[in-house]
Each structure stands twice: as structure tokens, then as C-alpha cells.
Image (cartoon, rainbow, N blue to C red; front, side, top):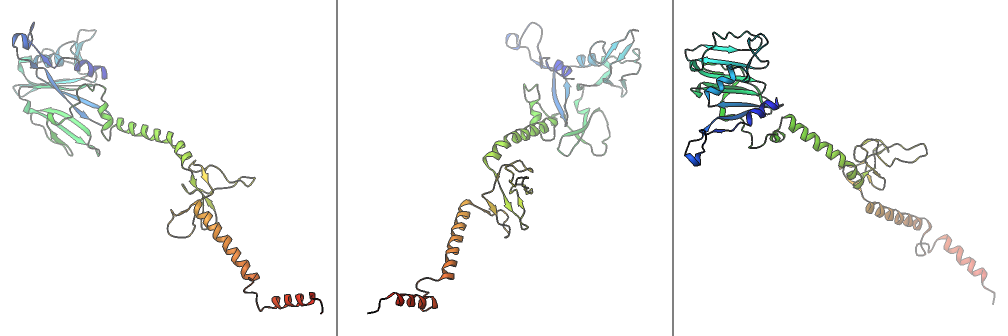
Length: 321
């Protein structure tokens, strides 16, 4: 399919008179064809608007020009996946289809044709005396890409879900982009999806570095179960009682110096190391205050039984006069 498209596209867009150029002899350059595309999710289908009746007729009806050929019995047959319709000036038409016998005696001459449409695995080619009689019908998918398409001549019904568009409404491929790299920028195409998947894989490949740089913060839930602060997976100790260094759920390194408060509405409120140190200092101060309260200070011990006993001991130690 690609070879067929490229073989057509390598033809020159313009056709000059023999043995001369526009600059040298003043001949007017004649455009040979224009091309637009049906952009679907899996491929871009070319549609050629031909300006040469002779070449289009040859492509449709002449042996070896693409549509028909002579078999071993010298019979004119149509190639697979190719068809052509010759629309006549008298209102009739002559169809050339695969697996059907071609009656060469009834095949109309070029002069009798008012329009020609050729369709194959490479796309569509059409010519008409009046291009306004060429009708293009399409349906679109949820991404705005072409879903179904057809090219007709003359009066044609519009089916449910279809809309008629002009040739100029079809996609114009960027000049020189034979590899169709533009498709990777159009949402809904397989190329766009592959690009997104490649970006996700690249992000996943970089994830271990990010995990090493930013460890997950371990926390205790309301039931006292240790959990990963990133994914919430339960953290189970080993047979030796050691907690895991890496979360089995998300694969991130674990940091146990940080804990999230199990109570409170703010589930993202982590205790920092400074908070822990401040908490430890507050606890030490509270313990010291508790001891002072239990034992009493020299000021608070005045007038107590302990103080009276101390005075009696001092009196007994004094020598008599």
C-alpha cells in the first residue's frame, strides 16, 4: 500500500510543454492533480483530484495502467482491491469490478465519459468535466476522525449519520511529510496512542530515580497499623521483626522518621523530623515537671513532714554545750 501511494506521489505536480520550461519559452504550467486525505484512526487515505482526463481514463480502463490487465487467456480482467466507474455523458455508467468479466466491446471510449472514479488500496482518484458533480460523504468518530467515507458522481443520497464535505475540506498533508509524522499529533490515531504510550513508558523508566529522591512517608492508621504514606499498603515486618525498606505496593523507599497523625481531618498532615524533635523535647520537659511535682522542690517542701524530720536529724548531730 505504501509503495503504491509513493509511486503516485513521485509524479510531478505540473506538466510543461515538451522541450521547454516556463521561463525559457513562456509556456503555462498545467497542474496535473491535487491530493487531500481521509484521516482515519489507522491510516490516511489519499484522494486525488485529477485534471487529466486521458491519464485518468488510462488508469481506469487500459491494460497495465493499474486497474485492469490481460490474464493468461488474453482476457481483460480487473485487479483485486481495485474498481473503476466510467460515468457517461448520456447518463449511464460502465463499472469495472474484481471477479467480474469485462466486456471490452461495451466499454465506452474516453470521449463518451463525463466523469471517472477509480478506487484501490491506495485511495481514490477522480476526474470530471464538472467537478461540482463529484460528492464526498463521510461520518466521524468520537475523536473527530473520519470513520466511513465514499466518493460519488451525480445525484447521490445521504445516509444516516453522513455529511457531505468538499474536496478542500479534506486534510492537506504538510509538504514533504511522506512518513506521515503529523498523525502522531492528531488525537485518536494509532500513532498518537503509541506516542502517549511511549511517553508513559519513559515516565515509568524514570520513576525509580524519583522514588529514590523522594521516599514515601510511613504512617500509623487509626488501628495502629503501619501503612505506606504513598499508596496506603500495609507494611508488615519480617520474621526477624524488621520493617521493610521498600513498599511492596508502590515500590517506593520508606522513611520511618515521619508519621502522619492518625486523627484529624487533614490526611496530608505529616509530622516532620523537627516536629518529632520538638515533641521529644516537650515530653522530656513534661517528665521533668512530673518528677518535680511528685518529689517537690525545696520551696514547695517547706513545712512538710519531710522538712521537720530533717530538722530533727540536724539537732541530734549538734554537740551539747
